[in-house]
Image (cartoon, rainbow, N blue to C red; front, top):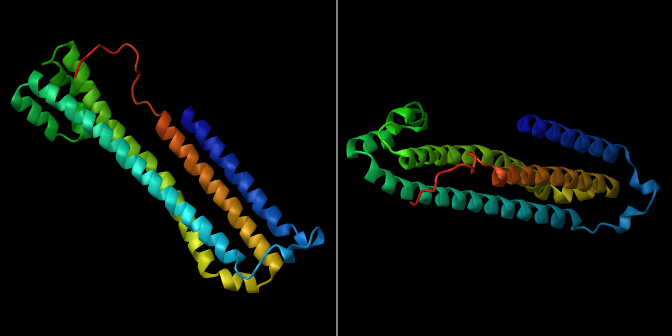
Length: 213
């Protein structure tokens, strides 16, 4: 349900962006105001340069956030592993840890049968946290890809800044406005994905046993 709603919002955002781009292409700003005073010889250069640096900075922030989040989860996993090592037999624990995520999920009930209630909770949490890392890595791909697209677009714009300026003020105005609309769309997509990652909860936090690890 949530995924369908997100997909619907994404399509609405794409349609609005395309409509705005079409309106910019059709719109002739010179009929309303004098745009020749808006731009200097280096306006396009500064514009694309600023957006390129902004995208690169956001890319770095998202990457650092993802690394920090994964490290914090792995730290908690290590704490749980130490506790499980005390509860499970050495051979069972080693066999369990050698399994990939799918293997852990398939054999979860088998290993839980050797544990007490608190141990079962810890084993569930161990698998859930590994699952959460996988989901985090999958979820962060979209904003990073979007930011790479923004970096490429503005990088090309920066390379062609002088050429765009020489094509005329009206053309330059439209190109910069279209790029700004695309940039806003990309940033909204990134924000939406980051918020989904932050709000993501793999398992319910209610009715959990009080376990000290």
